[in-house]
Length: 489
Image 1: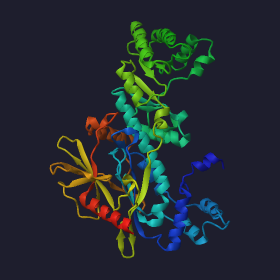
Image 2: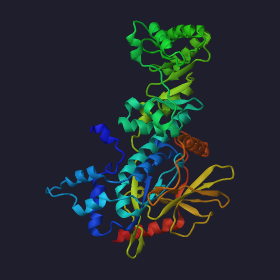
Image 3: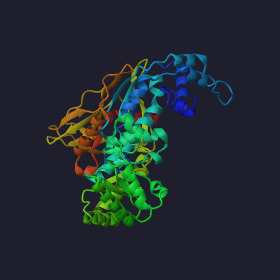
């Protein structure tokens, strides 16, 4: 079997860090593997210096959990792992347990396409400690990466205004899975299409593309190359004009466009991939319009991101479609969300206990409890604040106060007239999905609507207004007491 075939096997239980397994074996030895537990997946800081994030990756994560098991090849491999003293890392009893393991945890999650904020649990896993621990790493990589890319895409789309954005990043992505996950998440974030054909086939995303510089180089001259492409793709003629000289290339594209018009077709577009995109697009638009090609679109690429797009639009660039690749698929300016997966509650023989992780940095002190998230909405439909609360505490009143997890002196009153909605909803019960996944188009539409419900000041690219997120007062007080108690021991 090839390494590629093995990589894309249906069962991904061993897509994990070794410490999940060594801890699991330790839980078995200590007799706590079956204790009921709760873990929460969140992130500490909004990415890209932005004002919000877009949740993504849940459907892929649930698909992995649904088929979570260790097959004979997994067990055989793990039985050969050795520790520093050359003794087996895992004994037969633990491996037998893994061989018969069936995932039975409950999962509650914020639906894909929802705008989310730092410290909020995007996903909550409740069930036997061994199982809830083993899925940590795979959930972090799937949900963390897709949430990061969906957020980046939303920012790029915001910068582009009403212009469509195309995802062109497969060739620069971190491997096949990175390319596929990025294409899916970017579509959730609002891009109109992808160049990744496999992503189009798997996810139903529209596919778009032009041609490369090599097409032009194959032929003796640019005009011949453009004419040949028009013959080969008569209904899909967007010509890359910057192989030699961009404005000369535009002139050659116009000549090809005239040939297409004579056959009853149209020149769909030209693409600029280098140089001063503001100046070149303005000049290209002038040349096209003067030649009567007023409906021919100008596509721009070349390491674009939200900041560059915003700058080009401010300069009056005449660009109709934006092709964004490397800086979207790799999240070039922040390549990791920094997602975390923390134990927030565990059931000991004497009842539930709420452990807290301490840190010298207040932002890294964990939030203990069976956490939920409540969003408050004003009468116009605008999102006003989010409350993180503990489902095991009495239900908080609408007129409560929320406390910043990182600064106890920073509080915000909740208007009792605001309506509320629960963000964490059941996704799996007993390891089985509770409902069919929404279509990717529905998730994408949800993201657009969610972002539209934020104040424009929160959506701006630079120095956004801070959306209020805080702990419900009783949760804040219990967390504080637990921190004080732990500091004293």
